[in-house]
Length: 167
Image (cartoon, rainbow, N blue to C red):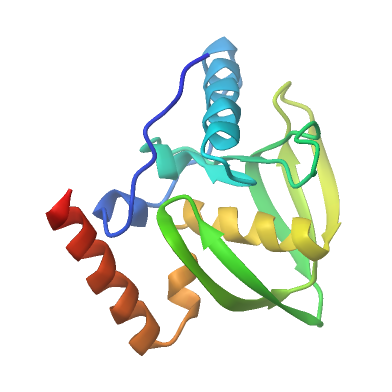
């Protein structure tokens, strides 16, 4: 396994829209393993392939305290969203050090493939639902900052650009 480089905002590659995975083979499975290793090392609870500059619809998640419940969603498709919204403080491995309150549906139903290529559906609520939506946004070229006011987005962008200049 290998650690992958995580892209940081405002890198324009974070805005690319991921393409569906056509075949789940050993290369994809190794890549998923690398995504998990990278996510855990960061440390984070979710990672989208687009965050490591791979434009394929793959996300890895583990919201467990013990870090032993890995979940891989390949070609995730949100089929249903609940009516109730949940306000959660979100952060992102691609926007380090920034945490802001975002409102998202508290319950979703998702269809996806797992690492073995088996199709299934996941009913998620609470933190898992929020995390899946956050990562699916990445696959669609969106960041959690897109859910914030223009003033907050501009402040975050200016801070990120300044940090990039100083690096």
